[in-house]
Length: 386
Image (cartoon, rainbow, N blue to C red; front, side, top):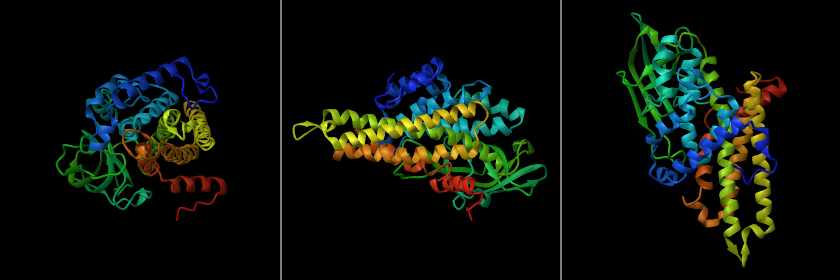
């Protein structure tokens, strides 16, 4: 499947297996997501009915090994993320929350019993997970979270609030991070537990075909076995956030590519002053600049993916990809909208929908500012977060 934006023969850098995986996800997106996404977005509906098909494609926890997971490479996961986000950021976010956050937390830090209980069901799409870190007053600074878990007669009792928690109102299990007398700990919380309440945040101007929630935890009592046993401190959630940030590096470029293709196709058929928009120099300049950034963004994503598969990818390198590709993708989507003119503000075309979604994507899993400061600290040796 050739991409109109590909100026460098990107496919030649992929293995045949990587191309097959990419093409299978693209076919799914073309047949199941793109014909329906405008309606889902307009009605603010997350389509739960597509989860079983995502599971059949091996997209849920696809980079994890065992427990019914596909055991795919980082590059394959990235290629899938790009195709999903070409459909819509909200649907790629589902795969990210399910696999890179909730499942990864259990996989990396859970007990064998926790893994056996939840991971096979989550890989099969029979159980949905969410990941509760962000709070109403603790976004970029999770160390200031106030959710607290105290010990009581061998149990844990959780109290607090979380905000912007993807999938929480439809999830079967939540990974909740809380302060304790022993530092930050993670807890596996079945959402049917008394005292757990998730309320969708509405209305939204972005990520409308997705679910984000406020979560309230009021005397949520859990057995001692609910705590993730193999990690304490913020390195626990951060290890999962890095998985999600990596997927965004690819996903944002998928949205950008789809917006570009919409603009390229439109410019070839829309007549102005008796010739197609594509025949004008200013339009060609826009198209060329966008295509260049898409090619560079995918090259960066692939390079980081190869490093991740080799076990050499460092956190600040993930920040390079997340910051650059989100920043460029949102500009590409906005520029694509200008080529569409007034028609571009309708849901008949994808660029403005992608741009609206990317306002969320550039905010979650570390804002532009946070990733800038991570890289500034790397370059200068001086942390400037406070």
